[in-house]
Length: 373
Length: 253
Ligand SMILES: Nc1ncnc2c1ncn2[C@@H]1O[C@H](COP(=O)(O)OP(=O)(O)OP(=O)(O)O)[C@@H](O)[C@H]1O
Ligand SMILES: [Mg+2]
Image (cartoon, helix red, strand yellow):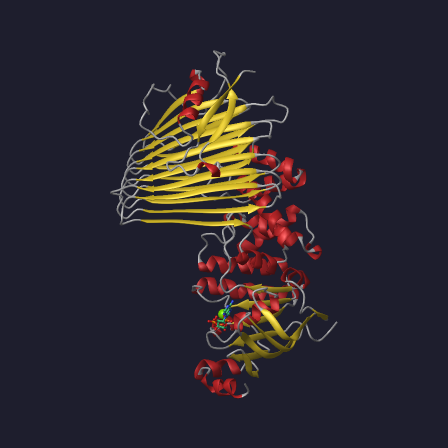
Protein backbone atom coordinates (compact mmCIF):
# COMPACT_ATOMS: atom_id res chain seq x y z
CA UNK A 1 0.00 0.00 0.00
CA UNK A 2 1.25 3.46 -0.87
CA UNK A 3 1.84 5.64 2.15
CA UNK A 4 2.50 9.27 2.75
CA UNK A 5 4.03 10.95 5.78
CA UNK A 6 2.20 13.62 7.70
CA UNK A 7 4.62 16.01 9.31
CA UNK A 8 4.32 18.72 11.94
CA UNK A 9 1.30 17.17 13.61
CA UNK A 10 0.23 18.26 17.09
CA UNK A 11 2.45 21.34 17.12
CA UNK A 12 1.92 23.49 20.22
CA UNK A 13 1.53 27.28 19.90
CA UNK A 14 4.86 27.87 21.62
CA UNK A 15 7.78 25.96 20.18
CA UNK A 16 10.65 24.91 22.36
CA UNK A 17 14.29 24.01 21.97
CA UNK A 18 14.43 21.32 19.41
CA UNK A 19 16.75 19.03 21.34
CA UNK A 20 13.78 18.04 23.48
CA UNK A 21 12.30 16.53 20.30
CA UNK A 22 8.90 17.43 21.51
CA UNK A 23 7.76 20.03 19.01
CA UNK A 24 5.66 17.88 16.75
CA UNK A 25 4.61 14.40 15.75
CA UNK A 26 4.97 12.50 12.50
CA UNK A 27 2.59 9.85 11.26
CA UNK A 28 2.75 7.56 8.26
CA UNK A 29 -0.69 7.14 6.74
CA UNK A 30 -2.18 5.53 3.62
CA UNK A 31 -1.76 7.72 0.58
CA UNK A 32 -5.10 8.97 -0.65
CA UNK A 33 -5.93 7.63 -4.08
CA UNK A 34 -9.32 7.90 -5.69
CA UNK A 35 -10.54 4.79 -3.92
CA UNK A 36 -14.19 4.04 -3.91
CA UNK A 37 -15.59 5.56 -0.75
CA UNK A 38 -15.81 3.51 2.38
CA UNK A 39 -19.12 2.75 3.84
CA UNK A 40 -19.87 4.46 7.08
CA UNK A 41 -23.18 4.46 8.80
CA UNK A 42 -24.13 7.38 10.98
CA UNK A 43 -26.80 7.15 13.61
CA UNK A 44 -28.14 10.64 13.08
CA UNK A 45 -29.77 12.60 10.32
CA UNK A 46 -27.10 14.63 8.71
CA UNK A 47 -26.39 16.76 5.73
CA UNK A 48 -23.10 16.91 3.84
CA UNK A 49 -20.48 19.41 4.86
CA UNK A 50 -20.36 22.78 3.19
CA UNK A 51 -16.87 23.26 1.84
CA UNK A 52 -14.73 25.77 3.79
CA UNK A 53 -17.46 26.48 6.30
CA UNK A 54 -14.99 26.09 9.13
CA UNK A 55 -11.89 27.73 7.79
CA UNK A 56 -11.42 29.89 10.89
CA UNK A 57 -11.58 27.12 13.43
CA UNK A 58 -8.28 26.10 15.00
CA UNK A 59 -7.79 22.34 14.98
CA UNK A 60 -5.70 20.46 17.54
CA UNK A 61 -3.67 18.16 15.33
CA UNK A 62 -2.69 20.83 12.80
CA UNK A 63 -3.08 21.53 9.08
CA UNK A 64 -1.48 18.37 7.73
CA UNK A 65 -3.82 16.23 9.81
CA UNK A 66 -6.88 18.25 8.90
CA UNK A 67 -6.02 18.12 5.21
CA UNK A 68 -5.39 14.38 5.20
CA UNK A 69 -8.51 13.56 7.20
CA UNK A 70 -10.60 15.77 4.94
CA UNK A 71 -9.33 14.07 1.82
CA UNK A 72 -9.58 10.58 3.33
CA UNK A 73 -13.16 11.06 4.43
CA UNK A 74 -14.30 11.27 0.85
CA UNK A 75 -17.70 9.70 0.62
CA UNK A 76 -20.84 11.59 1.51
CA UNK A 77 -21.46 8.87 4.08
CA UNK A 78 -18.29 9.71 5.99
CA UNK A 79 -18.84 13.46 6.14
CA UNK A 80 -21.58 14.94 8.26
CA UNK A 81 -22.85 18.16 9.58
CA UNK A 82 -25.27 17.86 12.45
CA UNK A 83 -27.21 20.90 13.58
CA UNK A 84 -28.68 20.82 17.03
CA UNK A 85 -31.29 23.21 18.33
CA UNK A 86 -32.50 23.74 21.85
CA UNK A 87 -35.73 21.81 21.35
CA UNK A 88 -34.13 18.41 20.80
CA UNK A 89 -30.94 17.22 22.48
CA UNK A 90 -28.92 15.02 20.16
CA UNK A 91 -26.70 12.00 20.45
CA UNK A 92 -24.08 12.05 17.73
CA UNK A 93 -22.38 8.70 17.46
CA UNK A 94 -19.26 8.14 15.39
CA UNK A 95 -18.20 4.51 15.35
CA UNK A 96 -14.95 3.86 13.54
CA UNK A 97 -13.86 0.36 12.49
CA UNK A 98 -10.52 -0.56 10.96
CA UNK A 99 -9.53 2.01 8.36
CA UNK A 100 -12.54 4.30 8.78
CA UNK A 101 -11.96 8.02 8.49
CA UNK A 102 -14.77 10.45 9.15
CA UNK A 103 -15.36 14.16 9.24
CA UNK A 104 -18.08 15.38 11.57
CA UNK A 105 -19.26 18.90 12.22
CA UNK A 106 -21.60 19.51 15.09
CA UNK A 107 -23.18 22.94 15.23
CA UNK A 108 -25.16 23.73 18.34
CA UNK A 109 -27.61 26.59 18.35
CA UNK A 110 -28.29 28.71 21.43
CA UNK A 111 -29.00 26.58 24.54
CA UNK A 112 -28.81 23.36 22.52
CA UNK A 113 -27.50 20.15 24.04
CA UNK A 114 -25.53 17.37 22.43
CA UNK A 115 -23.62 14.28 23.43
CA UNK A 116 -20.97 13.25 20.96
CA UNK A 117 -19.44 9.81 21.25
CA UNK A 118 -16.49 8.72 19.14
CA UNK A 119 -15.33 5.11 19.34
CA UNK A 120 -12.43 3.65 17.37
CA UNK A 121 -12.05 -0.11 17.54
CA UNK A 122 -10.80 -2.95 15.37
CA UNK A 123 -10.17 -6.63 15.62
CA UNK A 124 -6.63 -8.03 15.71
CA UNK A 125 -7.65 -10.00 12.61
CA UNK A 126 -8.16 -6.80 10.60
CA UNK A 127 -5.31 -5.75 8.33
CA UNK A 128 -3.26 -2.92 9.85
CA UNK A 129 -5.02 0.39 9.31
CA UNK A 130 -5.35 4.02 10.31
CA UNK A 131 -8.61 5.26 11.74
CA UNK A 132 -9.26 8.96 11.67
CA UNK A 133 -11.65 11.34 13.35
CA UNK A 134 -11.97 14.94 12.29
CA UNK A 135 -14.43 16.68 14.56
CA UNK A 136 -15.50 20.30 14.65
CA UNK A 137 -17.79 21.52 17.37
CA UNK A 138 -19.26 24.99 17.46
CA UNK A 139 -21.51 25.79 20.38
CA UNK A 140 -23.56 28.99 20.42
CA UNK A 141 -24.59 30.90 23.53
CA UNK A 142 -25.58 28.68 26.46
CA UNK A 143 -25.13 25.40 24.57
CA UNK A 144 -23.91 22.33 26.42
CA UNK A 145 -21.79 19.58 24.95
CA UNK A 146 -20.49 16.30 26.24
CA UNK A 147 -17.80 14.64 24.17
CA UNK A 148 -16.61 11.12 24.96
CA UNK A 149 -13.86 9.54 22.88
CA UNK A 150 -12.41 6.07 23.05
CA UNK A 151 -9.44 4.73 21.13
CA UNK A 152 -9.39 0.98 21.67
CA UNK A 153 -7.31 -0.50 18.88
CA UNK A 154 -4.95 -3.48 18.62
CA UNK A 155 -1.38 -2.26 18.28
CA UNK A 156 -1.31 -3.13 14.58
CA UNK A 157 -3.56 -0.08 14.07
CA UNK A 158 -3.05 3.64 14.44
CA UNK A 159 -5.40 6.52 15.07
CA UNK A 160 -5.41 10.19 14.16
CA UNK A 161 -7.80 12.44 16.04
CA UNK A 162 -8.22 16.10 15.19
CA UNK A 163 -10.71 18.14 17.20
CA UNK A 164 -11.57 21.84 17.07
CA UNK A 165 -14.02 23.44 19.46
CA UNK A 166 -15.48 26.93 19.65
CA UNK A 167 -17.66 28.04 22.54
CA UNK A 168 -19.96 31.04 22.59
CA UNK A 169 -21.09 33.00 25.61
CA UNK A 170 -21.87 30.74 28.58
CA UNK A 171 -21.45 27.59 26.47
CA UNK A 172 -19.77 24.63 28.08
CA UNK A 173 -18.15 21.38 27.05
CA UNK A 174 -17.09 18.38 29.04
CA UNK A 175 -14.62 16.11 27.27
CA UNK A 176 -13.51 12.67 28.35
CA UNK A 177 -10.94 10.88 26.23
CA UNK A 178 -9.76 7.33 26.81
CA UNK A 179 -6.84 5.92 24.89
CA UNK A 180 -6.61 2.24 25.79
CA UNK A 181 -4.72 0.94 22.79
CA UNK A 182 -3.21 1.77 19.38
CA UNK A 183 0.23 1.20 17.88
CA UNK A 184 0.38 4.95 17.43
CA UNK A 185 -2.31 7.37 18.53
CA UNK A 186 -2.06 11.05 17.68
CA UNK A 187 -4.75 13.16 19.27
CA UNK A 188 -4.95 16.92 18.99
CA UNK A 189 -7.65 19.06 20.52
CA UNK A 190 -7.95 22.83 20.31
CA UNK A 191 -10.66 24.76 22.10
CA UNK A 192 -11.47 28.41 21.63
CA UNK A 193 -13.31 29.77 24.66
CA UNK A 194 -14.49 32.81 22.78
CA UNK A 195 -17.63 33.69 24.69
CA UNK A 196 -17.71 35.20 28.15
CA UNK A 197 -18.13 32.61 30.91
CA UNK A 198 -17.70 29.69 28.54
CA UNK A 199 -16.07 26.66 30.10
CA UNK A 200 -14.20 23.50 29.26
CA UNK A 201 -13.29 20.46 31.27
CA UNK A 202 -11.03 17.98 29.56
CA UNK A 203 -10.01 14.69 31.10
CA UNK A 204 -7.72 12.39 29.14
CA UNK A 205 -7.02 8.91 30.48
CA UNK A 206 -4.60 6.54 28.83
CA UNK A 207 -2.93 3.21 29.16
CA UNK A 208 0.01 2.54 26.87
CA UNK A 209 2.14 -0.57 26.92
CA UNK A 210 4.40 -2.66 24.70
CA UNK A 211 5.84 -0.32 22.08
CA UNK A 212 2.74 1.83 21.82
CA UNK A 213 3.20 5.50 21.06
CA UNK A 214 0.81 8.19 22.24
CA UNK A 215 1.02 11.81 21.16
CA UNK A 216 -1.31 14.41 22.68
CA UNK A 217 -1.70 18.08 21.92
CA UNK A 218 -4.12 20.18 23.96
CA UNK A 219 -4.55 23.85 23.17
CA UNK A 220 -7.00 25.96 25.13
CA UNK A 221 -7.42 29.58 24.03
CA UNK A 222 -9.12 31.57 26.73
CA UNK A 223 -10.44 34.66 25.00
CA UNK A 224 -13.72 35.46 26.74
CA UNK A 225 -13.94 37.11 30.15
CA UNK A 226 -14.46 34.86 33.18
CA UNK A 227 -13.85 31.73 31.15
CA UNK A 228 -12.90 28.51 32.91
CA UNK A 229 -10.76 25.60 31.79
CA UNK A 230 -9.77 22.52 33.71
CA UNK A 231 -7.51 20.12 31.82
CA UNK A 232 -6.49 16.87 33.38
CA UNK A 233 -4.34 14.24 31.72
CA UNK A 234 -3.53 11.06 33.55
CA UNK A 235 -2.41 7.63 32.64
CA UNK A 236 -0.14 4.67 32.98
CA UNK A 237 2.90 3.94 30.83
CA UNK A 238 4.18 0.39 30.87
CA UNK A 239 6.92 -1.62 29.11
CA UNK A 240 8.50 0.49 26.35
CA UNK A 241 5.56 2.81 25.76
CA UNK A 242 6.23 6.36 24.66
CA UNK A 243 4.06 9.34 25.45
CA UNK A 244 4.37 12.96 24.45
CA UNK A 245 2.01 15.55 25.84
CA UNK A 246 1.86 19.20 24.87
CA UNK A 247 -0.63 21.16 26.90
CA UNK A 248 -1.10 24.87 26.35
CA UNK A 249 -3.38 27.25 28.14
CA UNK A 250 -3.37 30.59 26.39
CA UNK A 251 -4.79 33.44 28.48
CA UNK A 252 -5.39 35.96 25.74
CA UNK A 253 -5.34 39.70 26.33
CA UNK A 254 -8.81 40.85 27.37
CA UNK A 255 -9.81 37.58 29.02
CA UNK A 256 -10.31 39.24 32.39
CA UNK A 257 -11.17 36.91 35.23
CA UNK A 258 -10.27 33.81 33.21
CA UNK A 259 -9.01 30.81 35.14
CA UNK A 260 -7.22 27.92 33.50
CA UNK A 261 -5.71 24.94 35.19
CA UNK A 262 -3.86 21.99 33.80
CA UNK A 263 -2.86 18.96 35.79
CA UNK A 264 -0.94 15.93 34.67
CA UNK A 265 -0.44 12.64 36.47
CA UNK A 266 1.69 9.92 34.95
CA UNK A 267 2.39 6.58 36.45
CA UNK A 268 5.53 5.09 34.95
CA UNK A 269 5.36 1.34 35.39
CA UNK A 270 7.80 0.07 32.76
CA UNK A 271 11.59 0.29 32.52
CA UNK A 272 11.67 1.29 28.86
CA UNK A 273 9.10 4.07 29.07
CA UNK A 274 9.69 7.41 27.37
CA UNK A 275 7.60 10.19 28.91
CA UNK A 276 7.76 13.73 27.57
CA UNK A 277 5.67 16.67 28.63
CA UNK A 278 5.55 20.27 27.52
CA UNK A 279 3.16 22.29 29.65
CA UNK A 280 2.80 25.93 28.69
CA UNK A 281 0.80 28.74 30.18
CA UNK A 282 0.77 31.73 27.84
CA UNK A 283 -0.35 34.87 29.55
CA UNK A 284 -1.04 38.22 27.99
CA UNK A 285 -3.48 39.52 30.57
CA UNK A 286 -3.00 40.50 34.23
CA UNK A 287 -6.35 39.69 35.71
CA UNK A 288 -6.23 35.92 35.14
CA UNK A 289 -5.14 32.77 36.90
CA UNK A 290 -3.25 29.98 35.18
CA UNK A 291 -1.86 26.98 36.89
CA UNK A 292 0.00 23.84 35.96
CA UNK A 293 0.61 20.91 38.26
CA UNK A 294 2.32 17.62 37.61
CA UNK A 295 2.84 14.38 39.43
CA UNK A 296 5.13 12.21 37.43
CA UNK A 297 6.79 8.90 38.13
CA UNK A 298 4.62 7.20 40.65
CA UNK A 299 1.47 7.36 42.69
CA UNK A 300 1.53 10.18 45.26
CA UNK A 301 2.63 9.30 48.77
CA UNK A 302 -0.78 10.22 50.21
CA UNK A 303 -2.51 7.92 47.79
CA UNK A 304 -0.03 5.11 48.38
CA UNK A 305 -0.50 5.42 52.15
CA UNK A 306 -4.26 5.36 51.82
CA UNK A 307 -4.16 2.30 49.57
CA UNK A 308 -1.60 0.60 51.85
CA UNK A 309 -3.88 1.20 54.82
CA UNK A 310 -6.52 -0.76 52.94
CA UNK A 311 -4.14 -3.66 52.29
CA UNK A 312 -2.49 -2.83 48.97
CA UNK A 313 1.25 -2.96 48.37
CA UNK A 314 2.86 -0.49 45.98
CA UNK A 315 2.79 -3.20 43.32
CA UNK A 316 -0.93 -3.81 43.93
CA UNK A 317 -1.51 -0.07 43.67
CA UNK A 318 0.28 0.14 40.31
CA UNK A 319 -1.76 -2.78 39.00
CA UNK A 320 -4.95 -1.14 40.24
CA UNK A 321 -4.10 2.12 38.50
CA UNK A 322 -3.52 0.31 35.19
CA UNK A 323 -6.65 -1.81 35.25
CA UNK A 324 -8.67 1.13 36.56
CA UNK A 325 -8.13 3.04 33.30
CA UNK A 326 -9.95 0.24 31.49
CA UNK A 327 -12.54 -0.19 34.26
CA UNK A 328 -13.28 3.52 34.21
CA UNK A 329 -13.87 3.49 30.43
CA UNK A 330 -16.28 0.58 30.76
CA UNK A 331 -18.10 1.87 33.84
CA UNK A 332 -18.64 5.33 32.38
CA UNK A 333 -19.42 4.16 28.84
CA UNK A 334 -22.06 6.42 27.28
CA UNK A 335 -23.02 4.02 24.47
CA UNK A 336 -23.07 0.30 23.77
CA UNK A 337 -20.38 0.60 21.09
CA UNK A 338 -18.12 2.47 23.51
CA UNK A 339 -18.66 -0.16 26.22
CA UNK A 340 -18.05 -3.08 23.86
CA UNK A 341 -14.84 -1.56 22.50
CA UNK A 342 -13.55 -0.96 26.05
CA UNK A 343 -14.58 -4.49 27.03
CA UNK A 344 -12.62 -5.93 24.10
CA UNK A 345 -9.49 -4.31 25.57
CA UNK A 346 -10.46 -5.58 29.04
CA UNK A 347 -10.75 -9.10 27.65
CA UNK A 348 -7.37 -8.81 26.01
CA UNK A 349 -5.48 -7.29 28.96
CA UNK A 350 -7.37 -8.36 32.09
CA UNK A 351 -8.84 -11.68 30.95
CA UNK A 352 -12.34 -13.00 30.27
CA UNK A 353 -13.32 -13.30 33.92
CA UNK A 354 -12.46 -9.70 34.75
CA UNK A 355 -14.12 -8.45 31.56
CA UNK A 356 -17.32 -10.33 32.35
CA UNK A 357 -17.34 -8.96 35.90
CA UNK A 358 -16.93 -5.46 34.54
CA UNK A 359 -19.73 -5.91 32.04
CA UNK A 360 -22.01 -7.04 34.85
CA UNK A 361 -20.96 -4.17 37.11
CA UNK A 362 -21.56 -1.68 34.31
CA UNK A 363 -25.05 -3.09 33.91
CA UNK A 364 -25.81 -3.00 37.65
CA UNK A 365 -24.55 0.43 38.59
CA UNK A 366 -25.80 3.44 36.67
CA UNK A 367 -22.89 5.23 35.08
CA UNK A 368 -22.12 8.75 36.16
CA UNK A 369 -23.84 11.63 34.47
CA UNK A 370 -26.59 9.40 33.14
CA UNK A 371 -26.48 7.18 30.14
CA UNK A 372 -26.83 8.41 26.61
CA UNK A 373 -28.39 5.14 25.49
CA UNK B 1 -7.50 -16.54 71.60
CA UNK B 2 -5.97 -13.68 73.51
CA UNK B 3 -7.75 -11.21 75.78
CA UNK B 4 -5.72 -8.43 74.16
CA UNK B 5 -6.57 -7.68 70.56
CA UNK B 6 -4.36 -4.61 70.56
CA UNK B 7 -1.56 -4.15 73.03
CA UNK B 8 0.58 -1.04 72.88
CA UNK B 9 3.43 -0.81 75.38
CA UNK B 10 5.79 2.11 75.98
CA UNK B 11 5.22 3.57 72.53
CA UNK B 12 7.09 6.71 71.51
CA UNK B 13 6.61 7.91 67.95
CA UNK B 14 6.74 11.01 65.81
CA UNK B 15 8.30 12.55 62.75
CA UNK B 16 12.02 12.56 61.96
CA UNK B 17 12.33 15.88 63.79
CA UNK B 18 10.02 15.62 66.76
CA UNK B 19 8.42 13.10 69.06
CA UNK B 20 4.63 13.48 69.02
CA UNK B 21 3.53 10.48 71.08
CA UNK B 22 5.14 9.84 74.46
CA UNK B 23 5.17 6.55 76.31
CA UNK B 24 1.76 5.27 75.26
CA UNK B 25 0.31 2.19 76.95
CA UNK B 26 -3.04 1.06 75.60
CA UNK B 27 -4.79 -2.28 75.62
CA UNK B 28 -8.00 -3.14 73.81
CA UNK B 29 -9.80 -6.43 74.50
CA UNK B 30 -11.64 -8.08 71.61
CA UNK B 31 -15.19 -6.86 71.10
CA UNK B 32 -14.83 -3.75 73.26
CA UNK B 33 -15.53 -0.12 72.39
CA UNK B 34 -13.03 2.55 73.36
CA UNK B 35 -13.23 6.29 72.97
CA UNK B 36 -10.18 8.53 72.57
CA UNK B 37 -10.68 12.21 73.29
CA UNK B 38 -8.37 15.16 73.63
CA UNK B 39 -7.84 18.73 72.50
CA UNK B 40 -6.86 19.64 68.94
CA UNK B 41 -3.29 18.73 68.17
CA UNK B 42 -3.02 16.28 71.09
CA UNK B 43 -1.83 13.46 68.82
CA UNK B 44 -5.00 11.38 68.43
CA UNK B 45 -4.82 11.09 64.65
CA UNK B 46 -1.10 10.43 64.88
CA UNK B 47 -1.76 7.52 67.22
CA UNK B 48 -4.30 6.12 64.75
CA UNK B 49 -1.81 6.38 61.89
CA UNK B 50 1.01 4.88 63.95
CA UNK B 51 -1.16 1.89 64.90
CA UNK B 52 -1.95 1.51 61.20
CA UNK B 53 1.75 1.63 60.27
CA UNK B 54 1.89 4.93 58.39
CA UNK B 55 5.49 5.32 57.13
CA UNK B 56 5.26 9.10 57.71
CA UNK B 57 5.89 8.40 61.40
CA UNK B 58 8.83 6.75 63.06
CA UNK B 59 8.43 4.60 66.13
CA UNK B 60 11.40 5.25 68.42
CA UNK B 61 10.46 3.05 71.37
CA UNK B 62 7.88 0.51 72.46
CA UNK B 63 5.89 -2.20 70.75
CA UNK B 64 2.52 -2.70 69.08
CA UNK B 65 1.04 -6.19 69.24
CA UNK B 66 -2.07 -7.14 67.36
CA UNK B 67 -3.99 -10.37 67.65
CA UNK B 68 -1.10 -12.03 69.46
CA UNK B 69 1.64 -10.99 67.02
CA UNK B 70 4.19 -8.19 67.26
CA UNK B 71 3.39 -5.94 64.30
CA UNK B 72 5.72 -3.06 65.23
CA UNK B 73 7.91 -3.69 62.19
CA UNK B 74 5.08 -4.60 59.79
CA UNK B 75 4.07 -2.36 56.90
CA UNK B 76 0.58 -0.87 56.72
CA UNK B 77 -0.65 -3.26 54.04
CA UNK B 78 0.26 -6.24 56.26
CA UNK B 79 -1.44 -4.71 59.28
CA UNK B 80 -4.51 -4.04 57.18
CA UNK B 81 -4.72 -7.64 56.03
CA UNK B 82 -4.20 -8.75 59.63
CA UNK B 83 -7.39 -6.87 60.51
CA UNK B 84 -6.60 -3.26 61.44
CA UNK B 85 -8.68 -0.57 59.79
CA UNK B 86 -8.23 3.18 60.09
CA UNK B 87 -11.05 5.40 58.90
CA UNK B 88 -9.43 8.66 57.82
CA UNK B 89 -10.28 12.03 59.25
CA UNK B 90 -9.64 13.36 55.71
CA UNK B 91 -10.00 10.55 53.16
CA UNK B 92 -7.65 10.78 50.15
CA UNK B 93 -8.87 11.39 46.60
CA UNK B 94 -7.65 8.83 44.08
CA UNK B 95 -8.35 10.07 40.53
CA UNK B 96 -8.67 7.47 37.81
CA UNK B 97 -9.76 4.64 40.08
CA UNK B 98 -13.48 3.89 40.15
CA UNK B 99 -14.82 3.16 43.64
CA UNK B 100 -16.08 -0.19 42.38
CA UNK B 101 -12.60 -1.23 41.16
CA UNK B 102 -11.01 -0.14 44.42
CA UNK B 103 -13.48 -2.10 46.55
CA UNK B 104 -13.15 -5.19 44.34
CA UNK B 105 -9.36 -5.03 44.72
CA UNK B 106 -9.21 -4.55 48.49
CA UNK B 107 -11.80 -7.27 49.04
CA UNK B 108 -9.90 -9.54 46.63
CA UNK B 109 -6.79 -9.34 48.83
CA UNK B 110 -8.61 -11.03 51.73
CA UNK B 111 -9.16 -14.78 51.43
CA UNK B 112 -11.71 -14.65 54.26
CA UNK B 113 -13.94 -12.46 52.08
CA UNK B 114 -13.97 -14.83 49.13
CA UNK B 115 -17.12 -14.27 47.10
CA UNK B 116 -18.25 -14.52 43.52
CA UNK B 117 -18.47 -11.33 41.53
CA UNK B 118 -22.25 -11.58 41.66
CA UNK B 119 -22.16 -11.82 45.45
CA UNK B 120 -19.72 -8.94 45.56
CA UNK B 121 -21.97 -6.68 43.48
CA UNK B 122 -24.96 -7.59 45.59
CA UNK B 123 -22.98 -6.91 48.77
CA UNK B 124 -21.68 -3.48 47.78
CA UNK B 125 -25.06 -2.52 46.33
CA UNK B 126 -26.68 -3.46 49.62
CA UNK B 127 -24.09 -1.56 51.67
CA UNK B 128 -24.48 1.54 49.51
CA UNK B 129 -28.20 1.41 50.11
CA UNK B 130 -27.70 0.89 53.84
CA UNK B 131 -25.52 4.00 53.88
CA UNK B 132 -28.05 5.94 51.86
CA UNK B 133 -25.66 6.31 48.92
CA UNK B 134 -26.80 6.08 45.34
CA UNK B 135 -25.19 3.05 43.67
CA UNK B 136 -23.97 5.31 40.86
CA UNK B 137 -21.22 6.38 43.29
CA UNK B 138 -19.64 3.00 42.65
CA UNK B 139 -18.75 4.01 39.10
CA UNK B 140 -17.25 7.33 40.18
CA UNK B 141 -13.58 7.91 40.88
CA UNK B 142 -12.62 7.16 44.46
CA UNK B 143 -13.45 10.20 46.60
CA UNK B 144 -12.91 12.60 43.70
CA UNK B 145 -15.37 15.45 43.98
CA UNK B 146 -17.17 13.70 46.84
CA UNK B 147 -18.47 15.95 49.60
CA UNK B 148 -16.98 15.62 53.08
CA UNK B 149 -19.97 13.58 54.19
CA UNK B 150 -19.85 11.32 51.14
CA UNK B 151 -16.18 10.60 51.75
CA UNK B 152 -16.98 9.51 55.30
CA UNK B 153 -19.68 7.22 53.97
CA UNK B 154 -17.17 5.64 51.60
CA UNK B 155 -14.97 4.93 54.64
CA UNK B 156 -17.96 3.30 56.36
CA UNK B 157 -18.70 1.27 53.25
CA UNK B 158 -15.19 -0.15 53.38
CA UNK B 159 -15.49 -0.84 57.11
CA UNK B 160 -18.67 -2.81 56.56
CA UNK B 161 -17.28 -4.63 53.54
CA UNK B 162 -13.95 -5.61 55.12
CA UNK B 163 -15.23 -6.29 58.65
CA UNK B 164 -11.83 -5.77 60.28
CA UNK B 165 -11.10 -7.03 63.78
CA UNK B 166 -10.15 -3.52 64.89
CA UNK B 167 -11.63 -0.30 63.55
CA UNK B 168 -10.07 3.03 64.43
CA UNK B 169 -12.54 5.74 63.48
CA UNK B 170 -10.85 9.11 63.30
CA UNK B 171 -13.54 11.79 63.57
CA UNK B 172 -15.82 9.83 61.27
CA UNK B 173 -18.62 12.01 62.63
CA UNK B 174 -17.10 15.41 61.92
CA UNK B 175 -18.71 17.44 59.17
CA UNK B 176 -21.78 15.23 58.92
CA UNK B 177 -25.31 16.61 58.84
CA UNK B 178 -27.85 15.06 61.25
CA UNK B 179 -29.14 12.55 58.70
CA UNK B 180 -25.67 11.42 57.64
CA UNK B 181 -24.68 11.20 61.31
CA UNK B 182 -27.61 8.86 61.95
CA UNK B 183 -26.66 6.75 58.90
CA UNK B 184 -23.04 6.53 60.03
CA UNK B 185 -23.99 5.71 63.64
CA UNK B 186 -26.20 2.90 62.39
CA UNK B 187 -23.28 1.73 60.24
CA UNK B 188 -20.98 1.56 63.25
CA UNK B 189 -23.64 -0.33 65.15
CA UNK B 190 -24.01 -2.74 62.22
CA UNK B 191 -20.25 -3.29 62.15
CA UNK B 192 -20.22 -4.13 65.87
CA UNK B 193 -23.18 -6.46 65.49
CA UNK B 194 -21.99 -8.23 62.33
CA UNK B 195 -18.52 -9.26 63.43
CA UNK B 196 -18.16 -8.38 67.10
CA UNK B 197 -15.56 -5.84 66.02
CA UNK B 198 -13.38 -3.81 68.35
CA UNK B 199 -13.62 -0.04 68.13
CA UNK B 200 -11.35 2.85 68.93
CA UNK B 201 -13.43 5.95 68.30
CA UNK B 202 -11.65 9.29 68.07
CA UNK B 203 -14.15 12.12 68.39
CA UNK B 204 -14.94 15.58 69.69
CA UNK B 205 -18.64 14.95 69.54
CA UNK B 206 -20.57 12.79 71.96
CA UNK B 207 -23.54 12.31 69.65
CA UNK B 208 -21.88 9.54 67.73
CA UNK B 209 -21.46 7.65 71.00
CA UNK B 210 -25.15 7.66 71.89
CA UNK B 211 -25.80 4.41 70.06
CA UNK B 212 -22.66 2.70 71.32
CA UNK B 213 -21.93 0.95 74.60
CA UNK B 214 -18.64 2.53 75.53
CA UNK B 215 -16.36 0.33 77.62
CA UNK B 216 -13.42 2.67 78.20
CA UNK B 217 -12.65 6.33 77.63
CA UNK B 218 -9.06 7.55 77.17
CA UNK B 219 -7.88 11.14 77.28
CA UNK B 220 -4.83 12.31 75.36
CA UNK B 221 -3.13 15.62 76.03
CA UNK B 222 0.11 16.72 74.39
CA UNK B 223 0.93 13.26 73.10
CA UNK B 224 0.33 11.44 76.39
CA UNK B 225 -2.56 9.36 77.63
CA UNK B 226 -3.32 11.25 80.82
CA UNK B 227 -6.61 9.81 82.05
CA UNK B 228 -8.78 6.78 81.59
CA UNK B 229 -12.25 5.94 82.82
CA UNK B 230 -15.58 4.41 81.99
CA UNK B 231 -18.33 5.84 79.83
CA UNK B 232 -19.12 8.31 82.63
CA UNK B 233 -15.93 10.23 81.82
CA UNK B 234 -17.49 11.46 78.57
CA UNK B 235 -20.24 13.69 80.05
CA UNK B 236 -17.64 15.01 82.51
CA UNK B 237 -15.37 16.06 79.63
CA UNK B 238 -18.37 17.50 77.85
CA UNK B 239 -19.12 19.71 80.88
CA UNK B 240 -15.68 20.62 82.07
CA UNK B 241 -13.42 20.38 79.02
CA UNK B 242 -9.84 19.15 78.97
CA UNK B 243 -8.37 21.70 81.34
CA UNK B 244 -8.74 19.32 84.26
CA UNK B 245 -6.20 17.00 82.59
CA UNK B 246 -3.75 19.49 81.19
CA UNK B 247 -1.81 19.75 84.45
CA UNK B 248 -1.12 16.04 84.39
CA UNK B 249 -0.12 16.36 80.77
CA UNK B 250 2.67 18.76 81.62
CA UNK B 251 3.58 17.09 84.89
CA UNK B 252 5.20 13.78 84.11
CA UNK B 253 7.41 14.94 81.28
N1 LIG C 1 3.35 14.51 59.51
C1 LIG C 1 3.53 15.45 60.45
N2 LIG C 1 4.55 16.32 60.37
C2 LIG C 1 4.73 17.28 61.31
N3 LIG C 1 3.93 17.42 62.37
C3 LIG C 1 2.91 16.58 62.52
C4 LIG C 1 2.65 15.56 61.57
N4 LIG C 1 1.57 14.88 61.96
C5 LIG C 1 1.16 15.44 63.10
N5 LIG C 1 1.96 16.46 63.45
C6 LIG C 1 1.82 17.32 64.64
O1 LIG C 1 1.54 16.50 65.75
C7 LIG C 1 0.58 17.07 66.58
C8 LIG C 1 -0.60 16.12 66.75
O2 LIG C 1 -1.36 16.10 65.56
P1 LIG C 1 -2.65 15.19 65.38
O3 LIG C 1 -3.15 15.42 64.01
O4 LIG C 1 -2.30 13.81 65.77
O5 LIG C 1 -3.65 15.83 66.46
P2 LIG C 1 -5.16 15.45 66.79
O6 LIG C 1 -5.20 15.11 68.23
O7 LIG C 1 -5.65 14.44 65.85
O8 LIG C 1 -5.89 16.84 66.58
P3 LIG C 1 -7.36 17.20 66.00
O9 LIG C 1 -8.31 17.01 67.13
O10 LIG C 1 -7.24 18.63 65.63
O11 LIG C 1 -7.64 16.30 64.85
C9 LIG C 1 0.21 18.40 65.96
O12 LIG C 1 0.95 19.40 66.58
C10 LIG C 1 0.62 18.24 64.52
O13 LIG C 1 0.94 19.46 63.94
MG1 LIG D 1 -7.07 14.44 64.34
